[in-house]
Structure formats: structure tokens, C-alpha cells
Image (cartoon, rainbow, N blue to C red; front, side, top):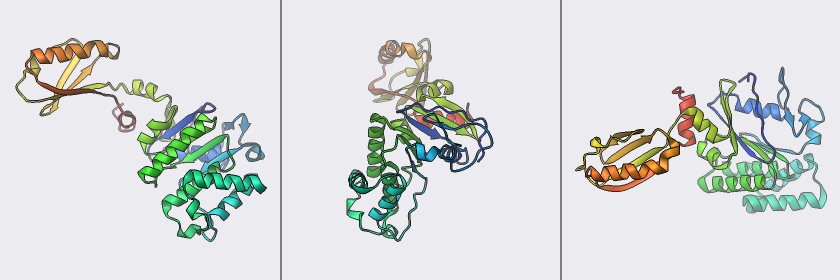
Amino acid sequence: MAVDHVNLTVEEGTVFGLIGPNGAGKSTIIRSILGLIPYESGNVLVSGTDMRNANAQRKLKVGYLPQKAAFQEWRTTEQALQILGRLSGLKGDRLKSRIEEVLEQLGIEEYRDRKVSKLSGGTIQKLGFAQAILHEPSVLVLDEPMASLDPASRFQFKKMIKELSDSGTTVLFSSHILSDIEDLVDSVGLLQSGKVRYSGPISGLEKKAALRSELVVELADERGEWRSVNLPGVDISQPSPGYLLMHIDDPERWDATVPKIVEALVRAGCNIRSFNRHNPKLEDIYMAYVGGSN
């Protein structure tokens, strides 16, 4: 997928997430950043270094985990890390100690002598993450890093990404798992058809999507006259029996308005079992854009 007039800025030491449908241009952007594919116009700067420069990869410490990690299958896990570590400039005792550290961090020490061909898909993905951070990069680029992982391994990856960011590493990653993006990122870029629809904090995307928080009220029975409740700036509906859904027009007055809603429902004879606030999730916001409602 070609990209058109893409302008993205990732602040140093932050986590930036790329989202968008298949074919939106996420992988193209990632490969352009890494200098893996040529681009006709524009510039890609990483820590001030132009990635068109032939020596860019030597000057920068960039770690990369592709969407599908691949290794020479006849090598063992440790051998694969040794080869890639040397290519990243590590050698001697430093290489040996870093291999020990990343194997322990990823919990794959027991597979150090096992050939890659005998590893599961999830373990190969962990090996891919291990090689990406082996040389302690200042910039880490991850393409769908958690797509093939079980929940425990996804939790582990997210924990490590947060720790790397806290230590000053700049992280750029793409993912279709929007909950992972929501858990991790400082900013997000939404791509569609090769163009950037939005770039910035998720809170700004939420405002542009014009989605409102909802108050969900669960009723103990159907005896109350909730339809008689009429409060300015409050829309009330019943999406299913036993539940009321309310939107408050002015988010700034949420805390002042909710007690009035509860009081009015009680006066109307409604027996309230519970109520809670539901804020728009990234998935809701994403669908508002990509799904065509905005």
C-alpha cells in the first residue's frame, strides 16, 4: 500500500501506536522508517538522522520485530541471538551477558539449545522480541508484536514495552488488538487508505469522533415510570429490559448531573440495582472513523 502525504511525529521516549485496517499503509510506514523500502519523496528522520543516508543504520541503535519473525531454522535459539547480536555490534562478554538477560526476560532460557524449527509460534515471536532488544536500542519498532501470543505472553510483552519506555526507549508499534494500543500508547496514528486520519493522544481522537460517555443504570424491576423523567441535557433510552442508557450533553457537568438523574429515577418509583459510567473505548472510536459513521 502506497502512503500519501503522511506526516507523523513520535516524541522521544514515548510509545506511539499505528492503527488502521489491512492495507492502510502501516507496514509501509514501518519499512520506510527502517530504510527497507525506497520512497519517492519526503523525509524520514530518526533521532535527527535521515534514513536515506547509507550510514543511517550504522549510526542509530534501532530494534525491529517484523510481523512474522523468521530465523534460520537449523540454528538454536542461542545461536540465532549470537549471530544477530554480532550484526548489531555486540561481541565478547557483552554479547554473552545480553543473551542471558533477554532469555531470562522473555522466559525462554529452557529453549536456548533447541533448534528454531522445533519452537512454537509464540516462542519464535518471543525470540524475535529478544533479538529486537538485544543491543539495547534507543528506538524500538514493532509490527504486530502480540498477534500470535497467548494472554499471559501478551501481558509479558506489554509489561516489557512499558519498562522500556520508562527507561527512555522510543517505541513505535502497530497492532490490530486495539485494547493493547489503549493500554500502552501515549499517542496514536490512525491510517486509512494510505492517509493519516488522525495523529495525537487518544483523548483528542475521542473528541473528534464526538462520542459521549454513557451512564448505564440497571433496574431491579419494571415498576418505575422512568419515561416520566425529564432533565435538561439528558437523553434516556432503554436498550434492553432492566437497563437504562443515558447520555449527558455537557461532559463538564457529569458529576453534578448524575445525582440528579438518580434522584429523579427514585422519585419516579424506579428501584436501582446498580449504575456505572461507560466511557468510549478505542474500538468504539476506531469504528466511528473506519466504520464510516464519522
